[in-house]
Length: 249
Ligand SMILES: Nc1ncnc2c1ncn2[C@@H]1O[C@H](COP(=O)(O)OP(=O)(O)OP(=O)(O)O)[C@@H](O)[C@H]1O
Ligand SMILES: [Mg+2]
Image (tube, rainbow, N blue to C red):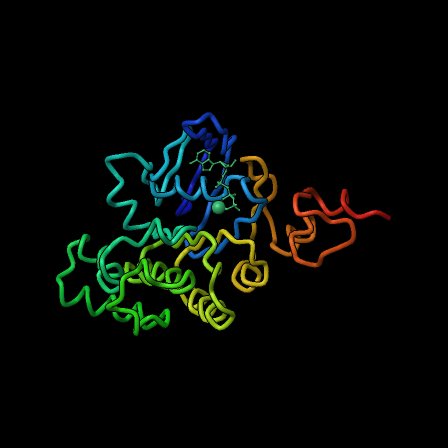
């Protein structure tokens, strides 16, 4: 049986010449949840932008057996719900409610049903009171909650969340973890938030310089790359590498 996401030998270079993906192989099964870990600039966001065709590199990307190419994009974008790392790239309608309803209306749902569903999603992320407000006036965490509501409203087959807990307050983080753990969909969580990732994922992959250099149980990956926040002596903000190479003795 094929996975819901299959990626083979994916390469991508930004137009300015920056190489961002250098041969990615990846597979996600239905119902599976995986954390994408790795340093700033290692290619995580670039990778997930390929999953619904916002970027197109060289190699093969298939969603539920469909190649990610122009003719399949409307169907693929219904299947893959992507919460952007930057909420400002996601929110563009005059009001929060219109923003959350946008995807539903665009997919052909009638107005009454779309508004009802959008209101339900806003309730889920604790943003009901902001329904009539302008997205660009919201706080960073509020914007994140609205962006998540917009994707949840669409009920996609695959959820891809790029740094979903950034800016969320601790109750918001707990609520999101609880909400996601109850959803049956396959999920990709791009995150530097290890407690959040560990609460939701058995599996993690680790990015380095545009490659997935490790794939396995999340506790093994976190230990191997010291990918947790237990600051040790002589640690600098730009040190990476495996734990064994960083700890003396
Ligand atoms: N629009 C762009 N043009 C040129 N280079 C880019 C662009 N966006 C990202 N890059 C570069 O591509 C590489 C991968 O970036 P990417 O955003 O995928 O990293 P990331 O793993 O998501 O990092 P972070 O943890 O900081 O979110 C980096 O070297 C980055 O500087
Ligand atoms: Mg990123």
